[in-house]
Image (cartoon, rainbow, N blue to C red):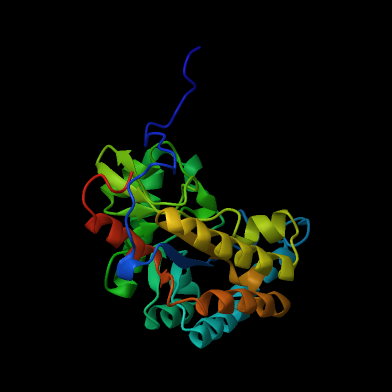
Length: 296
């Protein structure tokens, strides 16, 4: 039988039998929060929906999404401060002109700022290569000018990639990408400009698929986080693992969901002496420091 078409970016390497390494201080489970700060066009483009959208301008869903930037993200910032938890903040570059004080508030905490496209009203994967390269360059330039340093990591808006995306990211100087959700450990990916690291990013412990798509309740989503954490803590006895928690302020920043989320994150924070509570960029940097062959 002929082989099915593949991507050629990495080989199949099962989790069992891989080299074993530790995170800093001998920890085996790394946990990070991927906080999506997103901006949407009014009256056009893509966007998650609280309810089926009507004709544009779709004020209901636009307002729901904007609540995250006006209210939800600020309430979440207070929660992260109270729990002493850092974030990997995935930023639409258009936020720097729309509400720069929001991004600055997270940057001032020492949170990592990653590229997340210009806006989540568009998908990069449907663009031609020149257009996609321009999107990456524009996003990178805006973040670099605002933050004083270029972002190391990237998550595509809507986790959208073309066949050239890893190549374009590596050529633009990115060292890791969160788009690929196929593993619980970081994995090296091949590109035409060398290699780029795929750091695990969740699609199950992620409020959009769980709450918007599958309609999980606030307490159910919190329980998912707790159960995933407790199970991975045990699994990590066999080798290093990464648990990401993907959050969107317009969803979990709603007060009734925020209360349940705080419960779940407090459970994790109470175990900070036994895990590595960190940022995605720190995970990538640690992997780059390991001897060749440790990371598949």
